[in-house]
Image (cartoon, rainbow, N blue to C red; front, side, top):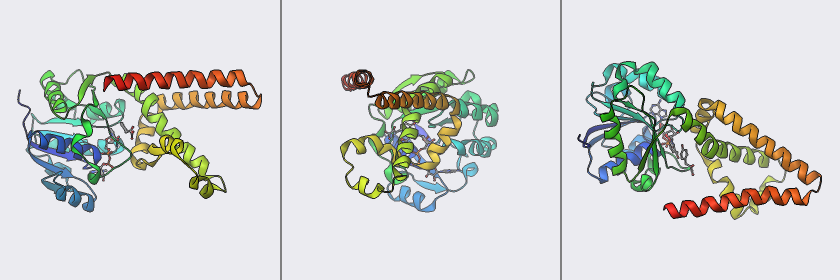
Length: 294
Ligand SMILES: NC(=O)C1=CN([C@@H]2O[C@H](COP(=O)(O)OP(=O)(O)OC[C@H]3O[C@@H](n4cnc5c(N)ncnc54)[C@H](O)[C@@H]3O)[C@@H](O)[C@H]2O)C=CC1
Ligand SMILES: O=C(O)C(=O)Cc1ccc(O)cc1
């Protein structure tokens, strides 16, 4: 098995696709990177920064002769892109994605790339930030981070092994999971925290003294709300794609908030101590375990 990539095509040339290209370039594992996108200024920036070697607006013509395609747009854009590239893919071209949701993307692979499934490996790098666009791409984004792959029963083991090897070259640790398990886990620890951060910011904006509040916002506010600055299209698509697990977790959060309101209304100090202690212990233990891993 060779890991060397002759022609990598990024469908979506932003933080995630661009950082993958940069990491492979640094490892000298890719000969040519084509960036596909809709925003000319972003593609020009990607060319200037050496993230890509050529740019295109047309996914179908770009993927011709490619041996690796990474779909790294918001998940709501992936279906039409798969449909557009299907007739032009070389038989041995590996197609993967970086979407934050997997059940919907696996269904799209089945719908649009059904004749190509042996070479399709859905994936999700668990690394990123609230930044977006090619200018935010960086070499080391995946170093020491995890990547989850959700191969299909039809996926050729060699295709999974090749992609695993490429992610390892980017410095990542690779895991395999079923799509439903992936979507349940990431609803809980990624999707719902982002949605709660948006929700909190919007509640703050309803106050008539919001400007005054923001003037005095400090570290706790910064820690809690950084992710509220994330890209609207990306998070709209995630909320819609992973709606069932997200709705379950959002409802569980509403129940916790209702319990909290009742404790405060009743002035129940013991209940409040227990509520806060339980969360605080779990967060502290997680931090300690996470530090050990690094
Ligand atoms: N931002 C993050 O921290 C992470 C994001 N992801 C996933 O990776 C994917 C990409 O996210 P980012 O790189 O952060 O977003 P980004 O906004 O930095 O890049 C996405 C790029 O796709 C382009 N695009 C949108 N629709 C397109 C279309 N139809 N054809 C061609 N280009 C199109 C946009 O113009 C943009 O340049 C998303 O599916 C996201 O859920 C996964 C892990 C982490
Ligand atoms: O900004 C952060 O801290 C993130 O949580 C980044 C992130 C966003 C989406 C993903 O699917 C994975 C990672």
